[in-house]
Image (cartoon, rainbow, N blue to C red):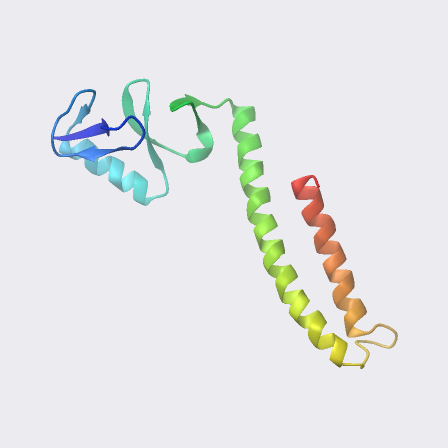
Length: 137
């Protein structure tokens, strides 16, 4: 048998020994939870049951988990996707900044009318517009 709970009222986990407020789990169910966690799910205490869930389906407020509505799930997933894309944009901007520095030393044209610096600046402007639309800034 394994036990799930918290001994300090904030950090939940699995334990070998029973303690006040712990939830008893069979070894089989404990293994199922660990396998689900390995697949990206989180383990939570919900309505006095230990379950493995997708993080986007539940929300923790004041140490109490609640199941989100389908609309709330969509909003949370969109926020996660936007955060991922914002991080990608920051990486792209860093790379373009490096290219822009090199372009200052290269007076050659990218094509007949556009310098490399102008080309990189236009790409940066597009990425910044996208980033602003994601973050609402």
